[in-house]
Length: 276
Image (tube, rainbow, N blue to C red; front, side, top):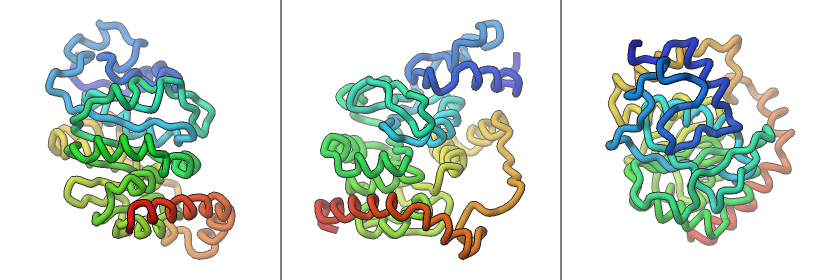
């Protein structure tokens, strides 16, 4: 069999592995649905020199934020650690639980990538949580790449790791980045030195392909894009305030008044704590 995963097999793996199992990060095989005849041993093992990635999984996380980035990094054959305070499965907004594979204490100290996915109410709950802040600040101080997307960038900013950096986040919350010392840039993916941030949930694949390029080069990232058949053609363009126009944007913001108010409250607490 060719080294690349064919489309049929990939879809079988995606359906069989699913979020319920959360594809245990340090287990070599991508999922358990396929036999070794379908996936030769060299495809199932994680190389000894594989990049080490820690992903913060937290209650009220948005499931797609984890799945998109993790899918890209799994195909890239990274060694992935899903980390949280304990190993109790954390609920996502879909109600599908994700079991952490490692606690904060068990997570490697030196990482190639620290990654924070989003989820607005999870951001509200944990951006000023001392355990979360201390973990991110510690691992982020040594990680080669410090990354986040969607509202995860707000959580990352709350740990002080975006202070003095250009960054972006989910569009309704971009105004809160400067409170914590970041400079907002209106782009889908923003790179500033070793910080990589991206916009809302659907930016996850773009974001992860940028990380893949940084870790293993453009050709490796292109291979992942081909495996995923990543060539988006939406039926309409309405994914940004600029595309949606003022009326649709206002309607969306009107439905988020309370929730975004909670983010603002926590961002101001972080601002005071960080002295920004």
